[in-house]
Image 1 (cartoon, rainbow, N blue to C red):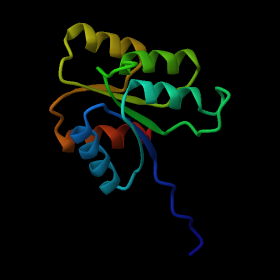
Image 2 (image 1 turned 90 degrees about the vertical axis):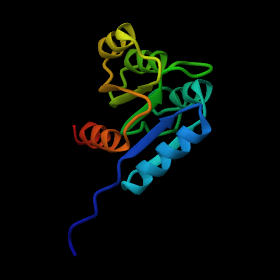
Image 3 (image 1 turned 120 degrees about the horizontal axis):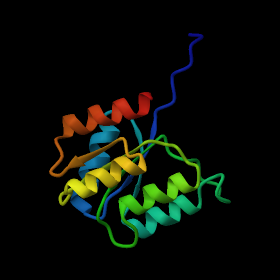
Length: 134
């Protein structure tokens, strides 16, 4: 065969709840994505600081899926930092506590979507598919 298999999209999942993170990672891996996971906002901040273009060696992910409320750095703070650094990868945010103000802030910062928890896995997979295709 002369055609190369397309590279699977790399997704960074940031979620401080162990069970939720495991569910997200398993769901996305089964859908064919390469998944890198971090446990909280501290690790998310470290990952962002170590990305290429920011002085590090890690490749930026094709998509970030992040909880909004996490110890260390919130998903919104991470999104703001990404945009300030000029990183344009799409970001999907998840929250069990999102009010209208949080949704508006996510839109203003350029989040692809803010999905309410508990997230329907079919809705998540559709949102991920749409985000990585653009």
